[in-house]
Length: 159
Image (cartoon, rainbow, N blue to C red; front, side):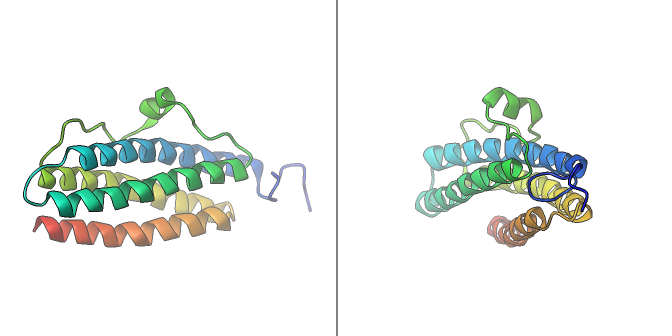
């Protein structure tokens, strides 16, 4: 076995580096997604307040867990996870949502963000598969299945 070009878990260093770069991009997007969800939770108003307040809390708790999982996966691949707001803001595609009080607007923004995350996760899934990185493949597969269902449910909420 050629260990010269392998990282600590036996994967090709260059391929793992590319996967980790994409995971860091995903991490940045999740951090903005998390902050937006907190804002929606705090600022939501209207007749659906109780329902949405609880749902947004559920979603931001889930996003926070994913932030940690993604960062730890980057570390597992022998790279360094992004860990500054400047880096997050420099690399995120998800935009900051401020002062959103309307439930339908918040859900629409969540759907936009989920579609960004889903596209990134699918890219990482393919890249990780080509790198024989089953750990990242499994993580992305889990996220994709969960988010496809969430997109369906939130879309149904808006119909």
